[in-house]
Length: 295
Image (cartoon, rainbow, N blue to C red):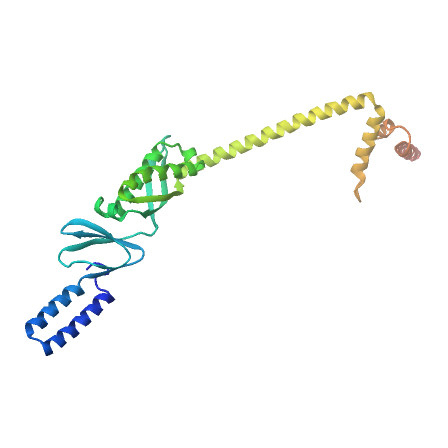
């Protein structure tokens, strides 16, 4: 039985028919009451209720009559046939392509989802059989064709372009059937485990190479700046002494730090604190040497 063939309108008509038949049997002859009963039954079989989101196709004597809209529709029993009701809401369909070779001969498994809607109920019912199954097969075929024309890296990095290409091709096919594809999205691209490991090692090697190149470039820039500094120190010994003093200070400024400075280095820094420290170190060395000779 077609969905909506029995509804509240049918029930009301049948109830009214029984009441009229009972009243006619009391006041009129049996022939008239039987006629009223037959007419009531025919009228009760006439109403059909179509939901807001559905559309139906009415055939009269096998020929297309009209598209049924939401609400109550009256048909002629025995002459009119409602083939089916089509849901006009947006639907989603999952489809996949398993072990499909890319343009660079890599087997991949791709999962995608498609959102589509029936825009012409007449075409969807009269021009194609089982349109839901057909659109799914069309989407799978298109996905395999697109994968075969695309390389793996391009498929992974440029999914938006593939989505647009799939949408354009599938919608071109289904528009002739009264179906509009609103969007197609690739959800997952799976590759063999061995190839995934190889790609991971390649990516790590590329990153390591890039890091070494950056380090080498930095060393070149540092060497250049140090060469410029050497030229400055060559023409300015005072600047060299100041730099040595600053380096010494930076080394011992932390609390608890200890630094042993050779006497030759302190002598090169000229007089001052370091010169005094050097003299102290020399005097201490001479005293230790005298004590050792006495013993």
